[in-house]
Amino acid sequence: MSAQKKPCTLREGYTTGTCAAAAAGVAVLLLLGGEVQSRTQITLPGGQVLTLPVEELRMEENRAVCGIQKDSGDDPDVTNGVVVYAAVEKMETGGVEIDGGVGVGRVTKRGLAVPVGGAAINPGPRDMITRQVRRAAEKYGYGGGLKVEVFIPAGVKLAGKTFNPRLGIEGGISVLGTSGVVKPMSKQALLDSIRLEMNVLREGGGEMIALTPGNYGQAFLMKTLGVPKPHIVQCGNFMGGALRFAGKLGFSGILLAGHIGKFIKLAGGMTNLHSGYGDCRMELLAAFAAAEGAAQALVQKLLACVTTDDALTVLAGAGLRKQTMARVMERIWFHVRSMSKEDMPLGVVVYSNEWGVLGTAGEAEGLIARMRLGSH
Image (cartoon, rainbow, N blue to C red; front, side, top):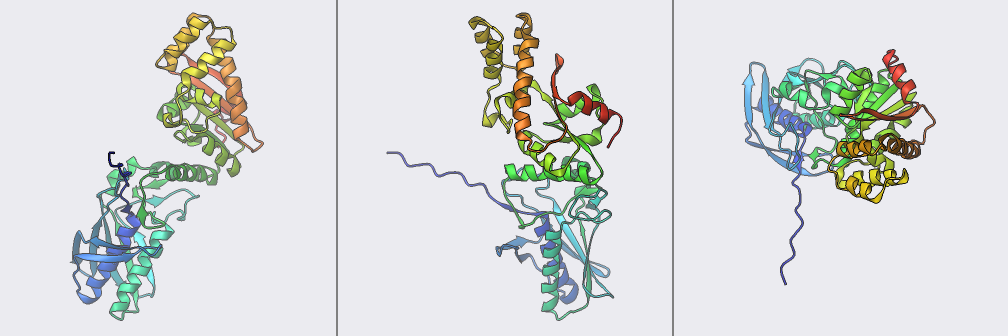
């Protein structure tokens, strides 16, 4: 009997917030006592104690600077490996003052955890920094004020690879981390990012929203349908979750737009459109075509298709494309309407790169017209 294989456990990492707090504490020790550390310990909000290596430590005139490199573990985070710096100096007023420098973004839109104009350092990391700084100051009996500047030089370039530009955070990345630990990217983490973007749109006065899985859908909305970019939020495969959250935020209209290859799954009641949850594209198209009178040979031909565009070509050749898509749209509308518990204007647009708009449902045309008029 062969030995059972142990399940692979993904390695956790630590956040930019953890790095900033640890760096700030080390910088205080250097500033107040000339203490040089090569490693430092930090207690996370959940009680876990981490020992982190110090990447860089130096004095710059009247301030101490420490840098700690982020380790994201097995999470595919674009900020993995960046060095997060904290510069600490004394100030005449009491307390701990925290601000962001180069590579830390500035908030320009309402709806985030940080007010407009503030450095994108979330409340959790701010608390961690304050605790670490005060703990280090107590070691040397210092009760005066300390000013902490967090800066991440690599953040300027990396910002464009994050959600920050969409959220209205300019000039750098965010200092994040409620728990201080980076867990390998989960469904919940992605949903939280999508919800945050929708919340920023709503807080900024947005009345209508267009949800689409990704870049292709956004391009179609903008170039073909004329929907202005500020209305559009990419929600990946989480169409059901995004739709429900948009309803709770009180938008006055929600438009869903997507390629037939993704949205055909809505016709089967799927709320997560990722292929890992099911690939029923051809089965659904074949079933709807059969309901419109497609013969067995045609159904088999559809089931053998690799892409939905190929299947549409087969349907067009048999004179059944429009009838089949009408049934598809009918079922999509049935399931989408049931996903949204809120009573509000709702519409769906399904398109194909080859065929353009394949069908609409609900109040799609009216919502598109309103968005074109610039009602934000």
